[in-house]
Image (cartoon, rainbow, N blue to C red; front, side, top):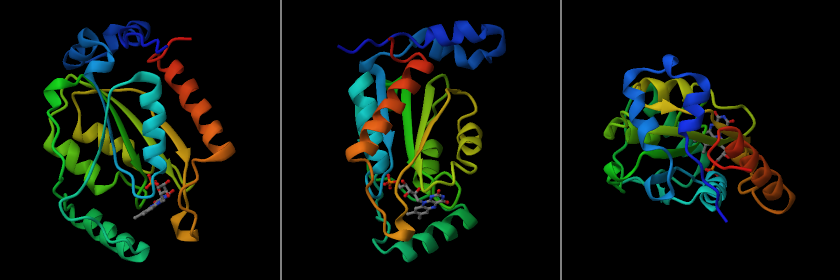
Length: 205
Ligand SMILES: Cc1cc2nc3c(=O)[nH]c(=O)nc-3n(C[C@H](O)[C@H](O)[C@H](O)COP(=O)(O)O)c2cc1C
């Protein structure tokens, strides 16, 4: 059985005085499966696997970020394109639009790309005003961490409550290691996800 508890407790425990007025929307709404969106970008399915683990624990709608013009399959070509987009600030148009009014809590999943938040996730934050909503970042990477991703999320969604992120090593496409969330690794990551959700008080013991 899913035991989903209110994110309210978290805010009460860290002290209301520390929060900006705009964040109170998230406190009042609290986390419920019906009003939870799990929005994720994934090329080689590692971040998708984590998104599915989260959904199993907390429920909610799972929606992939897809582009109007998909990235190239070729690794060197996508590296080059993403570097150019990061350099120029280009925000690729998204294919799937979601009615964000239905949601208060957004699990926000992405791989690290060029030590940054991937351009499509910047597009999503740019296209949607998440003021008063709660953003819960999660990430996979090749072992180099999140880079500047969290800073960018805070910058593009300054009036959202942003909870502590989950980040884990996924594939290393450069070395031909693509999907790794299987066997022992899947079990390890699932346990880490469960621990994290309890720590941020989205799921109760
Ligand atoms: C265009 C591109 C850029 C990447 N840049 C980084 C990086 O800067 N740091 C890192 O640790 N991993 C980097 N990676 C590796 C991915 O973050 C890692 O393989 C991740 O688990 C992929 O998630 P996915 O399977 O959900 O697509 C990059 C991968 C791609 C395709």
